[in-house]
Image (cartoon, rainbow, N blue to C red; front, side):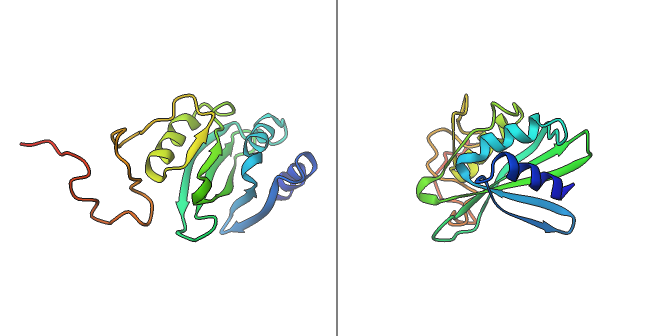
Length: 160
């Protein structure tokens, strides 16, 4: 099945696939940032593949000078009983990626959470705002440069 996914993606969107990886039974396809929506639509709409569920959208902070972040999409095909992971590199200086909420409505909350925790902006998102933190909070708690114990007095805490 992994070979078929790659073959179909490369036939339909040849420049979109940057690479792939299989580790302990998990299959990942690396996608260019600008192609994430087209790849998502293809994977969902192709009757043979039918990745109709976006289970999760999250990010990883590698804390590197280039391509610091990686946005990770966990997809599932009910038809094939198959998981797929799409991985997209995102640079800190241009920490934005197109939203896939037009493909999978379930991505709405996941993209908001990723924005709130990592500061990655999802362009075209219908309601991109903080998920856990107050709107005026200027930090992103899951970035590796965020202090482990937080930033003192950055959020007013309720008094007893």
